Image (tube, rainbow, N blue to C red; front, side, top):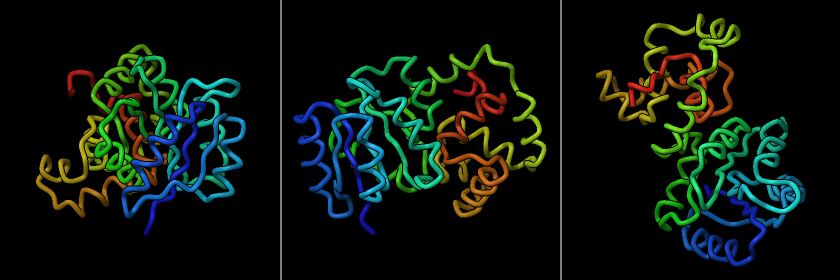
Length: 222
């Protein structure tokens, strides 16, 4: 199945470059573009996009506000957002993940990494660079953990699921979790899926945020 991609960036040259790269892959297709966050949601809805590459800094409505609008719309529940910027700054990482983005990527990334990132996010996985994860950890370090809501949610997890969520927070893939816990990859995937369902999180990226907020993942774990 072809992954449908929408590009949101105020620079036409940037969009053209990404489009050429993405359309070169047989399993990916750019189905729409927008140069402003205010127009992006309508384009995403019309094209039935799977993944959005979202610039952060744009005139008018920026990428953070647009990402939040997308992730809070029940009709767009299946849409995944990768936020793009030229600077991996802490405040952008935190704002992007807080708005519900599934990943964070530097605009200067290699074409092969970009294509793989789109595929990863389309599958519901998180896309967190080490710097992004550290920034998120630092931003949440002073937050009350766990919060009352998160504490109640964690009560529904089994001991194994708690362990798995902690490893997700460290950025481990299902295969890496399986190796760490001596499980089959399918069993690891099942634990992750059940934890996401119990915790009512949108995708794996939000599971990373919750793992950090609740203390299931610690700075010392990274």
